[in-house]
Length: 109
Image (cartoon, rainbow, N blue to C red; front, side):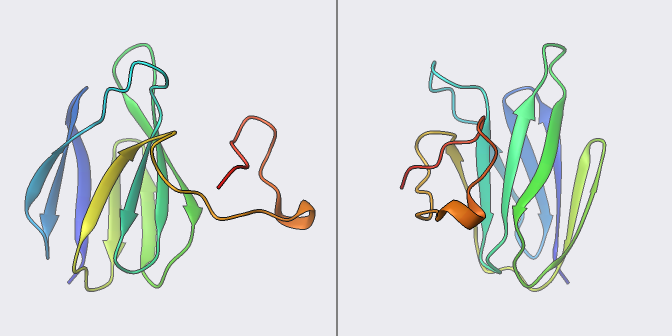
């Protein structure tokens, strides 16, 4: 089946489908961006704008087919879990020079 992820307020996202839950977007006071990670291995970066809208970008592709529109993520794969973490609270894989992210992304583990 899969899951559908939508922002429902500037501080929450709704997940429906295999998992039905509302998740609070972490407010770390340091960084507005946040990570969404799912059981298929996907990792998505959420970035709120100054108008309260949230943009999403697939950073690590897992097994799911991921479709991202302006305000929605559809993930076509059986999901067992989903988690959300603040930008600097999520663990990052150690990067090599050849796969280093752009300068604005953290490259620490």
